[in-house]
Image 1 (cartoon, rainbow, N blue to C red):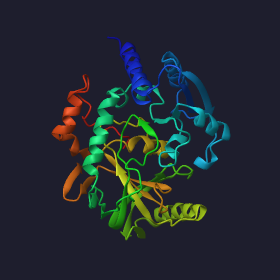
Image 2: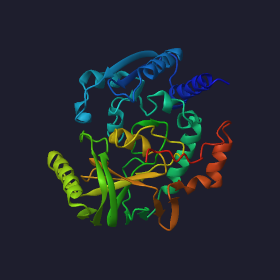
Image 3: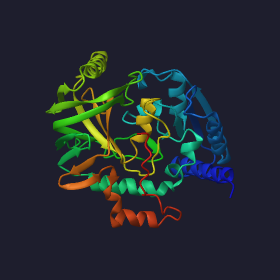
Length: 362
């Protein structure tokens, strides 16, 4: 079969997965599509295909482009807030979708953060494995992770950080994400308590809470000494330390929060997740995409409220919850359990759903 035909068929499968299986778009619904203009990762061809696909399902579609850099979710334009409030379904092919994941929902409709904004991602196995596989597997993972008391993270560069899990308040939702993600790629953040040890830092990326600029790619890693959830010292090249401290303290002062606080972490669970980008070219987009792959986990820092202002990615982690090794050098071992394997078997065409793709841009 011609490669273009195969890609077109994969894109159609990705669109069905996004619009019908994830967003649940039905005939007669009011659907708002929001896309980021001027971002090369958001291809106009894919934006148009999403518009056409939603209309083909019988939806009344409003498509809105917005290209200005947002300072934060508080700066979302009123006309977009109003459109989302009135919509049955909103699909956000825009960075603002990431900013809304841990915020109170806008309106009562379904909100979807769409990572599949270009042909590469939309045609990938990350987007074309049946959405039901990862909806069920994600729920199963959440059940397995719930109730843990301690955690530990190590990595080949020397990270060795551990702490306790802070239970959510009794009144808190067990699903803090208020936005669905397509494709699914991670679990709910785990709030840390008493984190102590060493954290090797290579990148300081946006946590998609507020605009932090381009973030920071360090020329050589620096090692943070962490005590009781706070970075108390940085070791390494003096110039790189100065750049890291400048960014952290600047964001802390700007937002009125503790710049050295680590508040939570989470890791990728979908082995097919693939960023198709390089951290040296667009660090924040790379982090947003790659953190869905088990080869990446990240800590949230700068401020007490999740997710803070900065993400600190770690590559190829070993992660223990209590005494269970669940991630081993970037492989998510929980997917090997019989219960989660059974989910895959019930969906035809999902044989490779849990196979690790190691291409994460580093």
